[in-house]
Image 1 (cartoon, one colour):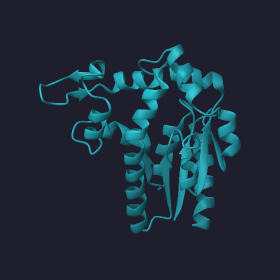
Image 2: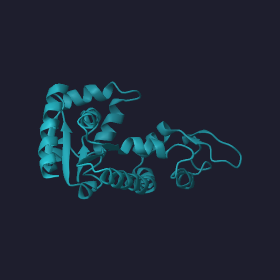
Image 3: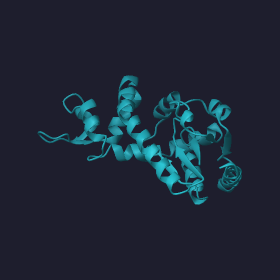
Length: 208
């Protein structure tokens, strides 16, 4: 089985590419979706999150608190905290990343057991976190910077300063493209992107 690492900077079309891969028969594990699940009460990571960000020190990231209870984490508030302070971001990542990796490993094992030839891990910070060492091939989704900015600014809660902070954290698109085994272009329309992905999947299936 071949494990694909799918990545791309914000608003480059990575989610669209992931959906296209799934339609092409390649199961995809979404790291962002996994994080969203882990931030919910009752998740396996929730007790560790409460311990790392206790209510008495971080009341502003909770939407509700109960005496003797942990309350509910406001994902948006936690994200703003992480993006504004590197130390808090690193602490959050130190809690979440092991759980995300464990979920990815379970996903790969299950798909391998099911006899899949290809699987993909959708990881926004694939190269930044060294996760490319855990996959067999990498795909970077790219688009012109003006299109990236236009797409990003349509997202709820996005601002120029927030986008700048996100991009500072991410590896430049040119470097991602230089490090990738395959490059997929989302700026030329969905049909063109799907055509590129079909060619990649066909080539990889020959070697799986």
